[in-house]
Amino acid sequence: MEYFIQQLINGVTLGSIYGLIAIGYTMVYGIIGMINFAHGDVFMIGAFISLIMFLVLGLIGITWIPFAILLVLIVTMILTSVYGWTVERLAYRPLRKSFRLAPLISAIGMSIFLQNYVQLLQGARVKPIQPIVEGGITLIQSDTFVVTISYLQIIIVLATFLLMSIFAYIISSTSLGRSQRACEQDQLMASLLGINVDRTISLTFVMGAALAAVASVLFVLYYGVIDFYIGFHAGIKAFTAAVLGGIGSLPGAMLGGLLIGLIETFWSAYFSIEYKDVAAFSILVLVLIFRPTGLLGKPEIEKV
Amino acid sequence: MKTNASIPLLTVEHLTMRFGGLVAIDDVSFTVQNAEITALIGPNGAGKTTVFNCLTGFYTPTVGRLTLNTGTRRYLLERMEGFHINKHASVARTFQNIRLFPNMSVLENLIVAQHNRLMRASWMTIGGLLGLPGYQKAQKQAVDLARYWLDKVELTDHADVDAGNLPYGAQRRLEIARAMCTKPVLLCLDEPAAGLNPKESAELNQLISYIKNEHRIGIILIEHDMSVVMKISDHIIVLDHGSKIADGTPEAIKEDPAVIAAYLGEEA
Image 1 (cartoon, chains in turn purple, brown):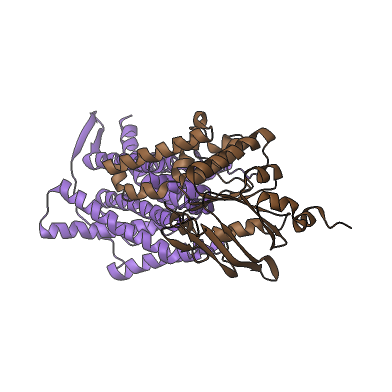
Image 2: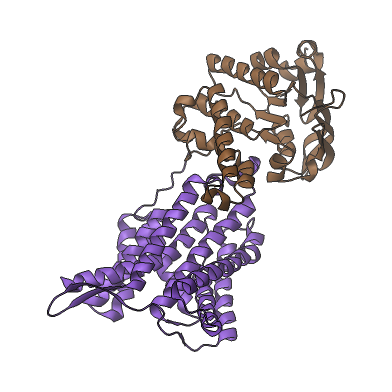
């Protein structure tokens, strides 16, 4: 039982990170119907920016941890958003009027480019960082097993739910969110009502990148090692999460992220760690067989 | 907005639209006055909707100049595209086949049309998230304007219903209300009475006349229903096969031999 609870805590933490990245996929898919394959690599860029920021802050002697984390979060969010915006501007916007597959191919190209760009500039070696947030709370102590929740895990889960609420609020009740939903339903009509569709799409990419940036800071804090290839792994998992939850649906992305995180963690804990990816993807296949639109996705109804 | 009566709100000069070898509109010129209803009529395929598409930036005319004069500024519509036409030149339109945002509530459909004012007030959302007073005020104004139009189109009781679930006639009225929420100086209505029953059609006449009389904006109307056209329009332009064949008051149009020929065929 204690073992189970511990795995549950670990799974929710991992799932939160996946969920944050998955939102970027699902928002972009919702508004322009395209899978942004470079999103995972934007996350990786964020991880490098936050690592560098932590080192810089350490060098100039800012060592009060809450302040340092906040500062890193803000800087990483801003810089990663600039990357997200630039990727959209350079690789997708010129292809908007082109055939459907063109931006998809361009996205894959962008993903390869970003990986190689970081590999060239930062080297291919794995980059470690010493643990920044340490300690935790012991929840249950039995003779054989101790269940702990680390402060970092608390931070991750809280930060995720806080951001999720803010973004859900933006989508549902602000002017930006309304125009995003309008563009999702009918871009032409939106532009006839004076909505700048291109800018709305850019802002969607910026929002997705900002959330990926938060995920990347949390990832760096949690795992402490990054390399230029983490974007691919995290991206594929988060994409799976978005599809599992129903692509295009915001709560779906979060639910999918949590499920993928839990499945991976429990599979590693009870069966074998080598096959955790197989387990996650098998569940995806099963869900898609019975619910092709994902768990919370709405089926697209063709009107005659 | 003050408008000089001698300068028309919209001046269309030598408008020509060719699609390859097909001439959809051939050298059409007309003017639209402020606070008047100008009807654009003609048999199927006469090029009426193409005129609208040129006015609202869907097509760039092959030849021609479309000048919108608001009294304070002059806009050349043929050089503008996309969202600029509504945002800057304040031209709004509705469609023959209704294009609401079906998954948004009726009220949201009207508020999304006021996007630009709200975005400015909320300083790109950030101010809105912080709840700045300027944004609160803009938000309240937006809701008030939406409520005003909901009341005018008799949809106040359905404010929270998804627009896609409204009955057909109500969707038509909502589309006009949404166009009005962008505060246009020129409103282009593409067959607003299509598919309405006689009672709904009569209510629509009242609504359009109300907009003309109370809001003093220019209205261009494409319509097949002659009872609507003859009753409410101040000025009628008749197109046939892409050319203008008549231009005048409803009384004059009714008697015009070219119009009768186009609609009923030549007398043997």
